[in-house]
Image (cartoon, rainbow, N blue to C red; front, side):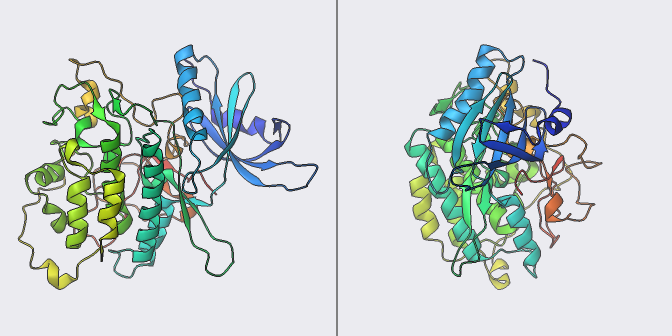
Amino acid sequence: MSEVNWSELAPSKLDTVIGGSVKLLEVLGNGSYGCLFLGQTLDLTTHADEYIAVKALSKRDLDDRQLALQRQEFDIHASLRHPNVVALHRVIEDADTIYMVMELCEGDLFEAIVRDQQQQASGLSSDDDFIRAAFGQVLDAVEHMHARGVYHRDIKPENVLVHYPDSVEGSALTFKLADFGLATRDSLSSEFGCGSTSYLAPEHFADDTYIGSAALYSSAASDVWSLGILLLALIFGRNPWQEASLADPVYAQYRRNPHVLKQLFPISDDVLSLLRLALAVDPSRRPSVRELRRAFSCVRSFTESSSSEHNIPPVDIPAAQVAPSSGHLVAQNKNVHRNSCDSGVFVSSSSWSDLEDDDSAFEGDPFGEVTKPIVSLANMPFAERMVRVPLEDDEAIFVHTEEKDSWWM
């Protein structure tokens, strides 16, 4: 399969009308496997023009299997109708391209977290109402999916879009799950490594004792693990480790003593209890999304006061300079046939944040300290890997090191 150069192709599609009623106005982002446009519906009868997002996927040189993977994305997406799932309005095809016409959102959760963090004087904790709304609505979306036998497999802040309220008093933010390029209907999957490294459950890595040489993992349990990592990102703007592999010293310490989370973050006992469920190393011990929601409803506060932190027995935290390696993914175990499905692999599309310009990588070691200031929200860096922020650093923002520009206006 030859890659399409969307940076060259996309401008030629501007101002064209597809499907007789959708005009492509502006390029919002592009990458190896697709492009996202700002579009506008053209209704000549009602004059009810509407701005929408149009995700374009090239069909050029794809074999039957690759085309089937492409179609699986919009088949799954079309089957999900929920206020916390981005709406897919229609699919338009021509000889070379598939266009997914979708609801337009004004931002994503990554941007919202960064903005919320920057507004906090301490730089440590986020607004409780914001956390409850965002995580609660994501739980709604994932529970809706799981009830219909669909599993997302790439839950992360970049794939949660945010619709900002109108000027109507009392309006609230709405959070919507997006990007079903890695979603599956298989409750048990052999596609290890499917998702974004920092959010992958330990069973995706070859050193996991609960999977070992097993050929399948639970798609639902893997989603629940990602939700646990997402909750920490929501509260503190950082992830606990680079990957849930023993190659990562912080995760290795968590395996030995889950209370290390209290040393990494000033979380409340309620949050620790919830995370010990969601981040259970044994996937069979993780709760369903409904059970996780029940635990979330019991959380009275997300953080502890500084005085209560001092009562926590100290836990040895290894130095963060040791860089874990995603080469330990189970997908590279030659004894079992597995498919690595990291977000940039499948031609069916990659995640919103993966389809970005190639020239946006930061220089230097992505596991080192943050050496660049946080950029403006209009130009946020995105990638699947996070920079490890020193534990004593009050500017606890996770920084994505290889991509930039949100998919959404």
